[in-house]
Image (cartoon, rainbow, N blue to C red; front, side, top):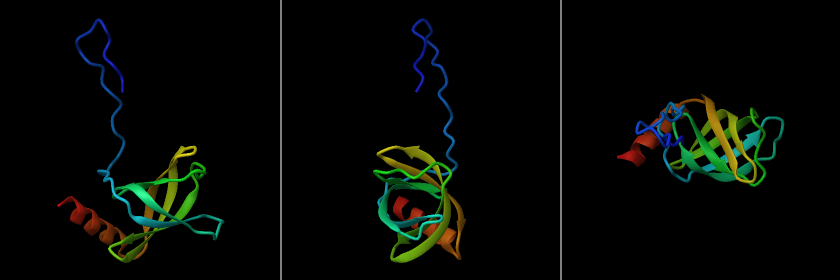
Length: 117
């Protein structure tokens, strides 16, 4: 956040939010496999949106890594191809959703609508 200049009463604009979709603080079980690694990591999201999620990891994945995610929404698996877009060492990663398998995007939309109403 940018603070206003001490001599000016007009605040300086802050950087615009780049997110395309609202983010919801929700813990959803997720299984992640990094491309080239068959060993799955079973975690929970810390937040979720139509465009991606954030996961906490002690050893964060590298930026731009491609991942295969399976979200468990209401007992239904949703398979998604994604890419790591933020990396916070010893904290976690932001993952952007790139492609949904089957009706995964519709299941995610219904899930997000259900938790917000």
